Amino acid sequence: MHCVALTDRTLVGVSGDDAQMLLQDVISCDVENLPDGVARPGALLTPQGKILFEFLVSRDGSDRFLFDLTQDQVAGFQQRMTLYRLRAKAEIAPVEDKPVHAAWGGEPRGGWLRDDRFKGDADVFRFYGAAPAQTAPRADYDRLRVENGVAEAGPDYALSDAFPHDILLDLNGGISFKKGCFVGQEVVSRMQHRSTARRRIAIVAAQAPLPDTGTPLTADGRPVGTLGTAAGDRGLALVRVDKVAAAMKSGTPVLAGNVPVVASLPAWSGLSLAADEIAGEA
Image (cartoon, rainbow, N blue to C red; front, top):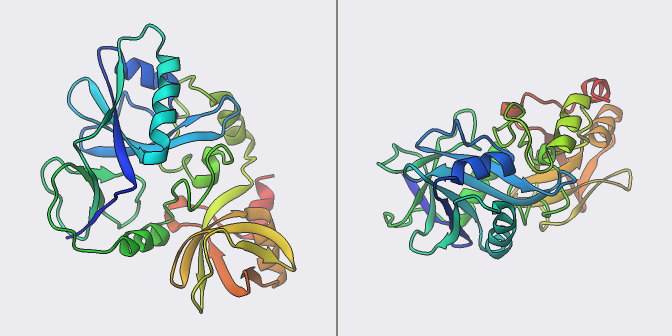
């Protein structure tokens, strides 16, 4: 089992008699059917449908939910959720005694949570609190995210600048299209029904080490995306799928800086960068 301490992440607890009702009405994912033992991706959106805060949410007992998010989101998330709370019987507070860890490559232990962003054959877990000794560097966890097309705010996209569809939340359980209204739901539903998502997180592969995060991706000198997490010769990139598909069809090289890359959408997504399929979504 490989274990990594995620020191840039922390927890916020939302608890109380009305906690589930509050969350069901506000955040993008479904919490009513959230099973024990699962950390589900989700987001709190702006009214315009863009991601304001990104997190993993899990149950912690009968009336508390834990939000696993980066430390720089905590104060803003707590403040925004307090505004939405109104008269609901719910407490929103940081959880300071449970450090965040990720683990993979073995059998989970009691109390560990399946990270539901990882699909296919990847079994990755979250656990909060005391942990076994760290057995892998952070770079191995980043490589694992890259290989599985799992984007995170900061290196892979900017908060308040991306829609849930951009980072595949529409496909990994991070959005519920059945539970009814939540903040930003109208815009997200319109994108879903009209198939207007034009950006997606892609996995890029090169024959040389990739440049730094934030490097533009270009085709024929024109921007087609931005490189996110880079792990050696593999990385994530937020790309314009129509422009990358057109470049691939015409044989135009896609470059990350000066490094040629091949882009593909994660296999578990069921999506393709084939130009005819992209055109069919217009």
